[in-house]
Length: 412
Image (tube, rainbow, N blue to C red; front, side, top):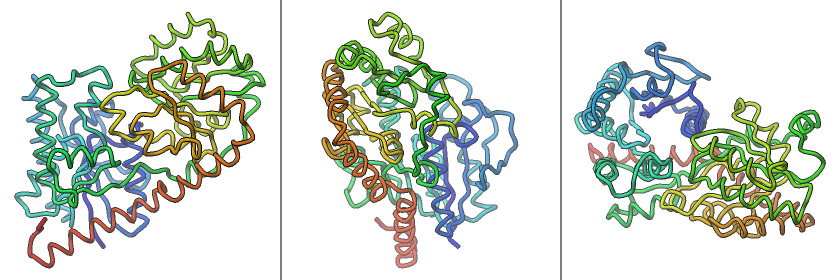
């Protein structure tokens, strides 16, 4: 049985898009008979899961924790994080003898794995889910082009160079790496996917929940996710007066939370359409399908930025799997997922007027919804099912091991 050691920034029991993608990868690989184990860095504790056992088993998955917590000034702190994580990887390589080490961004994880794999001549896969310097800009915790931005990008380039195989989640990231000089045949794409065992069946709307939220009998536009600035929820709120003018009974349902929650609540409270906007807050992951069931249209108004142009989100795919109409801004990440007029509709980013007009047109053309919903669900099943993604990883792993057997080492 092939053994793959995954190296992660953080994992379950924390809930994030990162941890849910990781779970899907691991369960899919287990389903193919691959033996998987995970190592997490010190940020697992910093993110709120500190004080736990050294080894945790969650949902049938084994996670080995790196002791300690990040501390000290920048650069020094990151250097010691890399060293501590490398020590944990090293110990697991001795104890568990993996065939492949598969590190997932950020580059701190990749750097620690590269250090160990280089010394041990172990096959090394590095997966990039986003460029974290761009994510910091999108989260409003970093600035494009400053020293930290450049250093993070430089470390990423070093890790990519060290990887025997690089994996990205979308073509936007792959094309950016190619523009940096990385050979195209070294970069595979394993796209964001949906666990159809969790999201493949749409629930019927719950009338009691609808009444509790005061949604009335009209159409519901919804967003379910994290409230970061780059998500463009201020654009969606600003679109509501025009939408209400065209469709007086329309309601906007915002489920989730994040750094922009207070600002968005203030904006909504001052809007002429304030009475049509509902904030729910965060809900348990297993309750999310109940809120999808209330929505007629799922809206994803991401702002135009380097992050959103390069990276594909997961949420529109979940919405398609839940048999929902998708309206999304025409940033690069959305254009990879949504075929305008077929699997959803696209509108100009950063434009409340265009957002309102696109959603209004959808509400006026319900006769086209059945075909659009069917096309969206088929797209997810054909291209974004995690069972298929697991097979993509298996192919990458076998190719790496075959090259090692043939050459006595990994050759790219």
